[in-house]
Amino acid sequence: MPRAVPPEPPLPATYHHGNLPNVLRAAAVEVILDKGLNGFSLREVARRAGVSHAAPGYHFGDVRGLLTAVAIEGFHTLHDELVRSGAGIDDPIERLKAIGRGYVRVAIEHPAHCDVMFRDDVLSADDPALADAGLAAYGVLEATVAAIADRYNADLPVQDVARLCWSTMQGLVELQSKFVSLDSMLSRTPTSFDEHVDRFTDLIINGLTHRQSGRSRIPR
Amino acid sequence: MPRAVPPEPPLPATYHHGNLPNVLRAAAVEVILDKGLNGFSLREVARRAGVSHAAPGYHFGDVRGLLTAVAIEGFHTLHDELVRSGAGIDDPIERLKAIGRGYVRVAIEHPAHCDVMFRDDVLSADDPALADAGLAAYGVLEATVAAIADRYNADLPVQDVARLCWSTMQGLVELQSKFVSLDSMLSRTPTSFDEHVDRFTDLIINGLTHRQSGRSRIPR
DNA sequence: GATTGATCGTGACGATGTCAAGATGTGCGC
DNA sequence: GCGCACATCTTGACATCGTCACGATCAATC
Image 1 (cartoon, chains in turn yellow, green, orange, purple):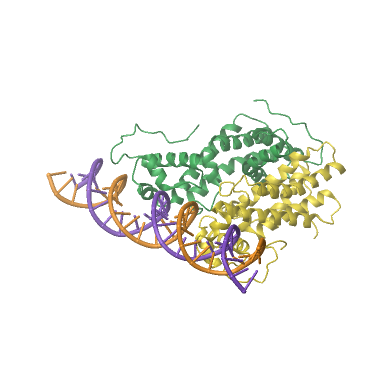
Image 2 (cartoon, protein in one colour):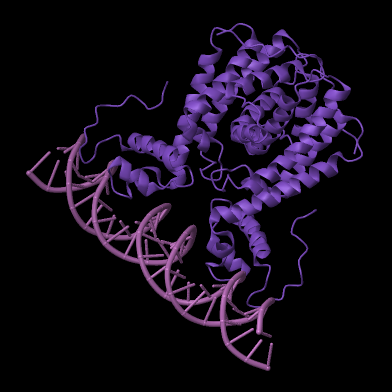
């Protein structure tokens, strides 16, 4: 769990305890986890952090400010995880698959962050730090696609493919709940998150007018 | 604009004016459009409809109830538009492309509905009417993919491909704003919604390890 | 024409976001 | 060592919101 919370000094617990922003951010994540983004409230965050109801407002200005901080943290985590997932894998196609699985791993392990990261309506979307963090994570993906173009197909529209991959993963994250309810409604055996990722990446890479490669799972 | 609002009787405007639910639903859409899903409130809806602040609660029980009604209406519209988009197109692959463009057309023309349709946290996700409406829309997509399998590739995993397409379109809808800001940040010429759809469907259909077919646009 | 039920309004309560003003520590110059 | 400016946090207040109970109003039916 890299960079979940910046290295925390032993918490002086004084009046001005110095790292309230970090504590509040962590508390916000827990509130989102417990009550959902809908039941989220600054006052609840303040209660869990053991401070007054207006303390969050001082540090983050706004409810959007706090959620934006959570989103930025999420993008940093995503970036680190994508880099980590692709490290040491030579074949760029395999690296792309690994990155895809890294994406959903972040979505699974940090659901609170992911609930916020793309919800421009609840966060201050014009925050440059937010844009930077998102751009950095996207850069990892685009670089991998560029490597695929280098090795396999120079005509590959790198930008389009990268966006396709991102859109697909993002849509999957959002629709996964619908898919499981759809599976249960049609009494099919439910398809897991990871399985969806593998099948999607296979489909994208092989193209659906050509013969499928048969759900090859990537060896860990 | 099929089934935007059920055929409206001339509005008696009396005390019990009979179709308040429809009026409230339309008002809710306008509030979402104006203030965003974040600034949405039942009282604002009531104000626009010219009724008391508790009237929405009577008909929809909950704020979730009203938003769920909007989402159901959105899924109906989506279903109708998907059917309409694919009608008369023989080649199922071309039909799939047309459906993809129908999807984003709905997203563009009914942004308020689409803001709500997949946000399970703000609506009562266990409403069977909601599930039915979503399933009906999805059925159009799956049927088209099944037609592709029939004609081109019997081994095609229909369910997976259908979900891939849906995920991709849904992700695109959600990320489009990020893409344009990304374009402007890198000072590229912005890519339109429709262009994204065409490129994505081309990429999915052709597969990214094979030669691209060069952004063929479908003649209308 | 009275009654029953659906429909809608009124009033109230607790909770929330946000602001202003005050309280409380911290660090810096001297 | 001391006072002062500042950052940090609390307190209090206000408008708004969702939701509930209760009352008012209308429509249809017997």
